[in-house]
Image 1 (cartoon, rainbow, N blue to C red):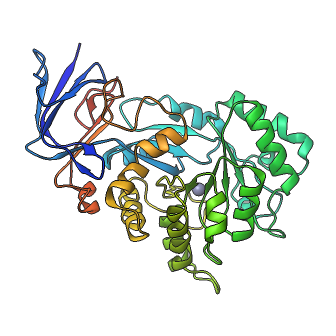
Image 2 (tube, rainbow, N blue to C red):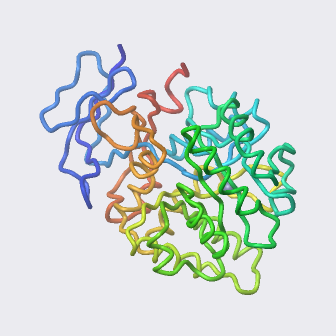
Length: 360
Ligand SMILES: [Zn+2]
């Protein structure tokens, strides 16, 4: 049995950090959290000295292509990534089994329309679905390829995305198969369509007309990806779009009490318009979420407990007994200053210190 004992750390507690506690980890799982805890015999001791111990962060919208992407996440304290589309499926399957690094759950190959932007990204041809009758087979194929959830890329009318009938059929087939559906919507019309058709989670927010209070109130859950909105409106400015519109959408979603998870759209691939660095940008996303009105502790929840719950990952997302020991030790108090998440002193994945532990 291996054990690690974190002494004198502060953990998230409501809107702030706790008094000093100790956290005990045995065989990759958090076994005790408390003021009176004592170090198990032969435990490795990590002196917290008042630093903050966070649950490993989650980037709820990124893309993986190779092992190095997982390591980039891990090096920045992001111990779980939600891969929102990747291919070929053999590569994704192999990345899902990598150890000693960040872990992913993945949509695998998404559903896309015939002529939208995504049709030019080099996905397998079956990504394109134009007939609602193909939805059930498409979902079954992805499920057998190991997809943990279903991703659908929607576009506004005339934008080359899947028809509303196809989107509706995919959502129904996915739910029949017990899979959640995340829909991409970066335009107000497609965002509204996704709300009306019953998507479980909508990712991105419009950069043109923002989401208003009425639509926000009906939104099921959101992964806004302010990082990519920031990057797109800076690198590829287009009339009628702005970062401010994306930010306003997040303000409206938060005001409506909608569940918001942090995601970046980080990707390291040659065949997309531009790259967003994997790992480091999740810390930027947290800062942007705070800039859109989330409190620092809400932003931290958006990168830990919220996405874990949103995707049914019951084994992670908080520092409580029984959870995986995916941990991040940072200097400072990120509930006061969110940029403190960047002051990384150590990362543990399943109880093994990243970069020093022996990969299982
Ligand atoms: Zn994406």
